Image (cartoon, rainbow, N blue to C red; front, side):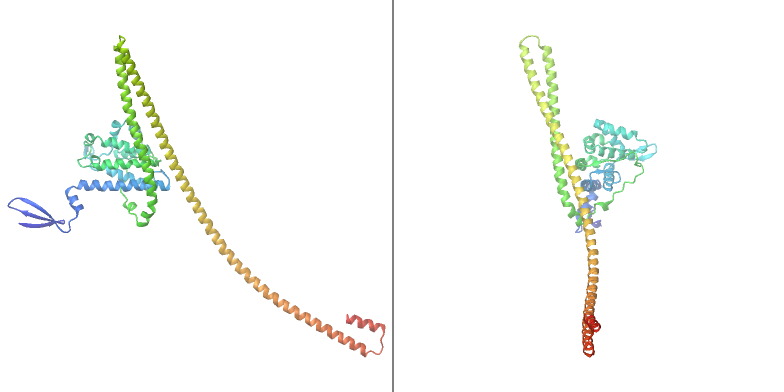
Length: 416
């Protein structure tokens, strides 16, 4: 007996009985075991996770920054890359005149036969002059289907015909397994966004489809900020799914009633042809009455379907208005922030100016005080001088020998 350790597994080989028993080592990794057991299953799981991240990120960013997207929008570009990888998974290699290739255009072109509504975009893809490769046509088809908001419906028709898909895909491919149905279900959520893509001007033949994983590696702050958006998106998607489910039920009811009306009309035609005598007329009238009731019910169901479609349009309009309001509030917030910054700068400049003015006023007050003190000194000097003058005048009068009128006037003028 010999023991061998291979990639975390311990093998115990018994030569006599030609058996091999696998024992799990302490470092056993379930994902490694799954990869060794079924690599296709691991590839499907990885593609499903990438599709979930891509679709979720596209919806969140579209609802946050405006729902009308163009070809240069990075999350939208990554979504097409991820979808291309999902649709390419397990494609059979076909031998052509130029060698071996994997044509993605083959299964997508087949949608036209399964869903007549897809004939318009298939014809548009065939008529585009700039496309030279099947891969370019497949990429153009994906973009047109997204703009038409029918991508989920077209791929749902495709995955239901696994007998036809087996001609294009190997066993275990995403489109043939449960992961393909899950991805198609996730694509329904993209109907809440609008895409305006210029397919004619893009070089779809030579693009390199590489997944940028950095877009999906979010930190804790991004996760915290996206919690509010997740609630809004969940509510919108729940409402849309509810309306779409009611619409599907109404469509089913309308089709069943239409089938009943057709069968009753055929029965009425046969009865009318067979009616020759009176006893058959009552039966014909009864059948006609039943047919009328069914037609009335059909009219009611059609009216309900129209009301549901109107409700969906009103819901989409409300979502548009809320998004416009949110964008307007953000612009107003930015304007208020700019005004606050400007006011703060003005206040700073005003404070500096006030400080300069206060300094000037203080210096002026100091000079004023100095001038006032000088004026008081001058006034005192004038008073002293006047007093001395009067004293001299009186002395002059006393000393004079004669008191003439001229001298009196002189003394009076000097005194006053």
